[in-house]
Image (cartoon, rainbow, N blue to C red; front, top):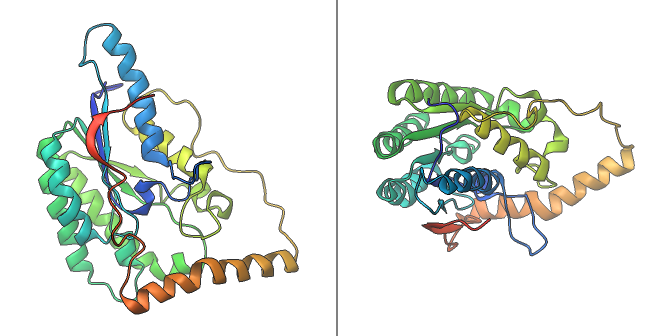
Length: 266
């Protein structure tokens, strides 16, 4: 990959991770690592545009929608992303599939491969990821499938010249303090570190050490832990189970976060 490349356009596709949950802003919307990365790329582009070397406007689209499975990402997002012809595309998906009780890994890998084959020829840089995971029982139950998915991602990247950002191996991103109360999505600090990881993978100088560990945790007492577990079950786990039982998704009827490849205002 070209070091410190200047990108004029960026398209992000995926699920809630790329949409930005749960990096909550004061207006109730979500920001997330893709928005943070777009802001950095736009600022870098502005400097280059001032020198007359690149198109005047940096453009950004984020087609991600929470709750999407890999088949939905491929069918609903990859065609539009390929048609946009952006310099940079990030594709993250499949984790919602592998964490479900029933999952056909052959189908998941085939659909992911379909998306990569569609996107890779249309952009200068395609970025794939080994997604982060919060340490705990859910991770251990899903680890074999996750590792199979990540192995497939590595092979696809090698075949198509894509970049893989390995977030799964970063110990700090497994730390519970990097995750929101729902225990499924990164918090603001987690998203900031992912943006830094992708920034560095694109060849830009490090602004911080995104793998730096947090200080040793202070374990809360049993009442606090019990209260947190009860809030998690009431506010997040039970609604999630309800959606699974009724075949619904948190993204049903929700439009893409940023559907058009349009100028990004800093």
